[in-house]
Length: 337
Image (cartoon, rainbow, N blue to C red; front, side):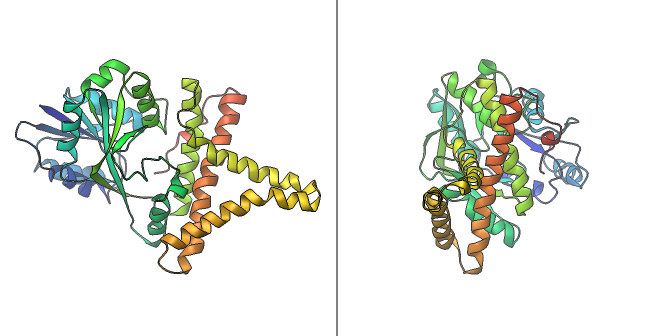
């Protein structure tokens, strides 16, 4: 049984070795023939040198050049590189548990209706700011109800991170859409569900994920998520999830608040009630997950960045893709990595 592990990567010097160690530390049955493919977007920080050094110990480790430097292109290059029975996609900042691969295969083999499996995300951090970002992203208030980042119990879902697919999935619905700089996994898994497949979140397996190390990078990341989500919606002529509407509706409400200033004062106060409720929930959640009082303000700020950046990105995408019927801008094709 052949299993191909695909790692899209660019300038991940600080994480790629731990990522590979996590893969090679997996407990695999003897009948598994494992191949690991690092699809590198022409890294310039020493990432390639680290992979090349490890490949001298593990001869089943290969580097594939991704000159386009795009994530969906990396996925497709990895899939095309080697014919396998199962394809496991792992981000360079993801460190999988020792049973991640074997239990994913077991689920896919025992239930043909399940086309995709992924595990529980455990956020990790490298500094004080990323620690608080990690905490905020681990809450339902921060990420939304039903988001794979906050799931606890095993069950069906709409998308997972570091997914495993049987090779037949790509034969049925094709490869990843290389026009999507972000949300290519959302698009692909939406196609999986539309084709009759199921996506399973398995809480028994897990992966550690190193979150963005600064609030500036977090803003850029989630702005792009919102922006490209609209592009995916337009492509499928459908909302891929309902929860995606919460941030743009919140941003739209905040914009309208300025126009509400022209209302009578008593009426204006009533219009501020949703904002008051939002801040109250934000404050309560921040206190609940903070270790000291000084963290509360930063956590509230992080919640605002998660929601406002996604919301503004979504509205920007709605204006560009739906109202103006334009193609994605070159600026938003640049990844925040």
